[in-house]
Length: 97
Image 1 (tube, rainbow, N blue to C red):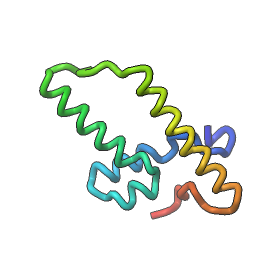
Image 2: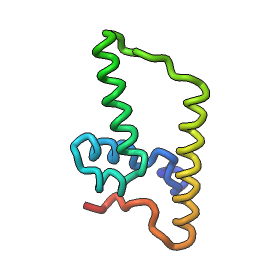
Image 3: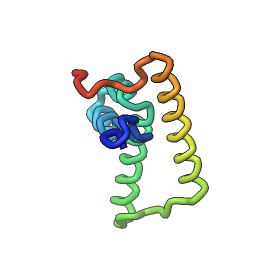
Image 4: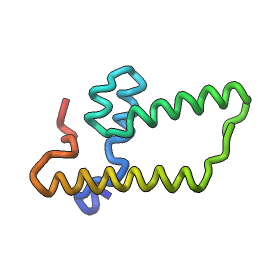
């Protein structure tokens, strides 16, 4: 989406944020995307459950839960976009260290 429109998508930088959280760098994780630490914790929990139950999909996602997650991501994205249009740099630069 960013390559086509120049507008970052709701999950832009979420992979980098999750990676930073999984390596213990929570400050950098939150700088990339606020949902990074939450996703990292969710992935760890999911992995433990999958190993314990010996199933790739230990639990089926619920529609209501997925709707709340989508709403939270879209709300966070809208906030970041709004802040960007007021001059605040809410999205990190790809050139940042």
